[in-house]
View (cartoon, rainbow, N blue to C red):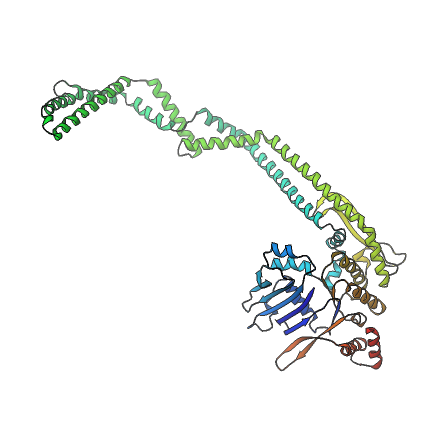
Length: 550
């Protein structure tokens, strides 16, 4: 529960600190005194968006700090997941700096706003006047029913499976689109693929063909030059080999005189061996060189095919053409195996749909099970709140479409008066009736969810007299099991609080400030008398105030 609240430099508040207790706490004050400012500050603690314009003195930072006793609420896992120190008395702090930057802390550890928002859902429920209108909203109605039905874990499971179902559906549509596009291009892709496959391409093939083409296209020049080179090596008197052999003979005569001369001899011998090999290879090459117009034409045709393919596909080499051929095979395969791929994903969608339907059925069953008891409880509370003839009807119908929280359609209907017909609750109830229905719902939820703190901002809108007294009794009863804080204008409700704070404005020489004080018994009597009789604090108003307190 919230044990203390400190607000500094926020809107009309310069510096206030209040200590809060368990049970039912009342906050009163004239319209415009600053009650909404306190709620705004609490909202910042729970992760609301910070507004720089709410800083009172823009030269100083705004600080809102709340201390919460959380030992009974099993939040150790939450703190562990958020990598935070767990303290039984935990402190949340929010700062708005003069620069406009906002910072948040849990037990002095900086955190993101999302962490505050998550923690806030475990600590405080702030009921604003606007929320009363949400009674007619389907999401709110589902939330109430699911909270009572304890559907939270089932809904989380359903949403996980729904996400997977939508992924599969999207993939199915994408695959259909891909295959539709591939089908349009199929014939052309098959043509291109066949063209490439017929070329029988291999790595290094282009270089080999170009080399063979040059040989076949230059037979005469090759024959003439190879013959001349061989002749120069082989001539008996002046050929290179014969000259080297003469050199070798001379060096052999002096080789024994030193290692240097022996080396000369050996090197010449090596040169002769190398030239012998070279001459033999050149002779073999000359033997292979022959005019072959048919082969030349065939090689030329193969080269032209490759050059044309390179130009068509904008490829630099054979390797790039082979990659393009591989891509084309993949595209053709997608089209040829389209039916099988679609069938496979359809099977997955069917299985996922069955799984979703089963979970949605469980949600429907859980909701249906608790609705009669919820209606009975609500009508009983409404009877105590001056609506003895009110009848609530909740229609739950399971459809076929998978929605965000199942397959159900839900609508609350109200017949406010005896003999009246059922109408949608947002159309059938007046403002005062909506307030009473909301209080009935909140009191049931409070007992169900075990929330530490609930804050009501003028839940008494549109009621007065005996009905207000009954509302006060219900709030008081709720305060027996949780911390209830109510902002009210009605003395009948204010008199039921165990603790009473008053918010008021005070002017000094510089500015107007919002302040808050805790009222003792006599101060409470004076406050209640003011609420009962305006500014005239009559004896009868005081007597009535005492009666309300007692």
